[in-house]
Amino acid sequence: MKLFDKWKWAAGLSLFALAACGGSGGRELPPATAGGQGPVYGEAVSDTPVQIGAPYTIDGRTYTPSDPSHYDEVGLASYYGAELSGRPTANGERFRPSGISAAHRTLPLPSYVEVTALQTGRTILVRVNDRGPFSENRIIDLSVGAARQLGIVEQGTAPVRVRRVQPIESDRARLRAGQPAQPRLDTSPQLLDALRAQFERGGGIIPPAVPPPDASGRSAVADSVDSSRPTTGAQWLEEEEPQPPAATRTPAPAASGSYYVQLGAFSNAANAQRLADRARRLGPVRIVSAGNIRRVRLGPYPTQSAAQQARSQARSAGFSDARIFRDTGR
Image (tube, one colour):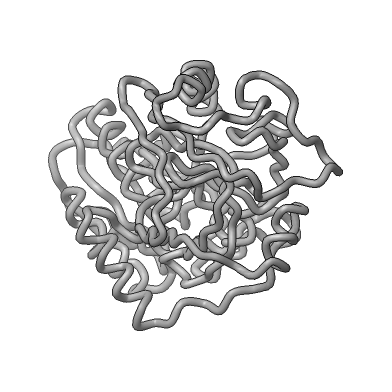
């Protein structure tokens, strides 16, 4: 969740607390939620009492917390980190970015979920102790520690499965202490295919996984792009991406408009084609070759505003690295 979302949550917190205490069937929230003090770093946290709470409204939308025995959903995950370190979560505990925790709009606080990255099948156990995210296209916000364990920090958002579970006490204790639970088995290829299909039926697109950074802080991408700087023919409207020398470039087919949204760059043709196939529902897609690098692009678009709208749609669909460039024709 972005900090902006958290501010919106804080603005609605007092109404949430009043509703929970007003006899409408919700349980009273812990003091920290109403502005008091909760446990701080080093203090023990508890799984009791479990808080559910009354319905609450954020930005005109009402959310109704519940206690389902079976919760299993696919959607997008985001994460939040150091900007909220030490602040009280919705159940009164202090948020620690390095812990393995999460925010969910309606599950009990606390509760436990397995989160599976649909790009890789990696699965981790997470403790839910906060409310959010309040962006419609996301179903869970992870702490940065949980996002790092799941392998999605480099992406910002990622398609996931969230399934409520009842873990053993030793795993609960580790998560309460801010430590990872014992490793989970990766999801089987057969189940992963079914989950990906479910996510795509809902309109989502699963981009290739982004490898974690190496010791230097740069992404350890096997499909790396050429390291030479751009020469002619394109102007990046955000940060520039390395391109091969002009002599090795093959121009894109002529078309109206001069703005494009690039989704990814690959040295492997099959990976580029796979990404292009997943992106076709977003609009016109092309693969542009430059030496041995294949760039997957949406467009062309006649104006920068149209390209920005397309980039926003691409990022909402899970293409967090989507960027705009302009073909200058030089």
